[in-house]
Amino acid sequence: MASSTRFVSRIAGQTARFPPLAVPRCAVSRPLSVRPRSVVSSSQSNLRCRPSNAPPFSSPRCFSTTGSLSRSKTMGQLRARHSNGPFSWKAALLFVLTGAGMIVYFRFEKARLERKRIAEMSKGVGRPKVGGPFVLKDLDGKEFTAEDLKGKYSFVYFGFTHCPDICPDELDKMAAIIDKVKEETKDENIFLPVFITCDPVRDTPEVLREYLREFHPGIIGLTGTYEQVKHVCKMYRVYFSTPQNVKPDEDYLVDHSIYFYLMDPEGDFVECIGRQDTPESATKVIMEHINDWKRDGKPLDTK
Figure 1: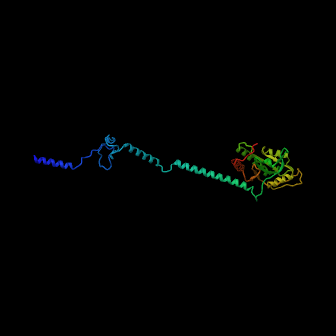
Figure 2: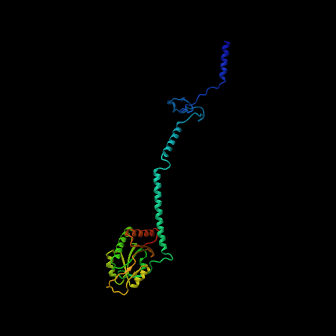
Figure 3: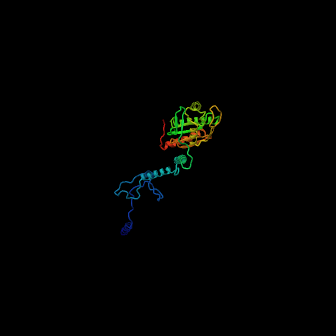
């Protein structure tokens, strides 16, 4: 009996040397990767921590499933967002369209500034001045001066009614240009086509009226004395050769320059249109200057 008592006392003493086993306060939501086997069954994997007297989050083994789901959702969104790389096809298309638009704009602006530079150079020192004051008569016998050209873009051509081929061809071109510019400007009265004769002896106002009527009713015909015509040709740098002492019934030819002179609303020379220019190309040049003038906010006479 005494030996049994000593054995029990020895066992109790050895047991007292070890601390009591800790009991987990909550069940984990999923097995930890450091453990070889899960201590919680699959049916209990979504259990939350049971209430205890310990302060919240005091146990490092207590995890929330909400945080895990939130993290996995965020990672999924990031993977989906970057699945196509840093640029999408929409961004690439927008980049290409923006670049193309900038190229077109800068080319247009460069051409506009070049036209403006050329127009300013034509007014500069050391260059021949085209245009100037003159006095002629229109088809009604009324006085017509260079001031009557101002306020609009004028399109001046020098010729004569007895010209066999060149003048009719150029007047056909002028008629086509008038219609095209009228269409482009939506019938604005800002374009003034003018025909000045180099043969004042035969080209009276009555003759000019009948001749120009065959091409376009909008062409303004001008004539005058030989000295008046000679002066205006000199102002526009137009070469012409006409016999002085001739009679109206005599047959002769007149040599002259073959150009259209485009003048701006201030009466300054802008551009020359030659025989090589088509009605389409000439209209394009004219409209570029008209649009540049409007863009600069300068006034135009539409009466």
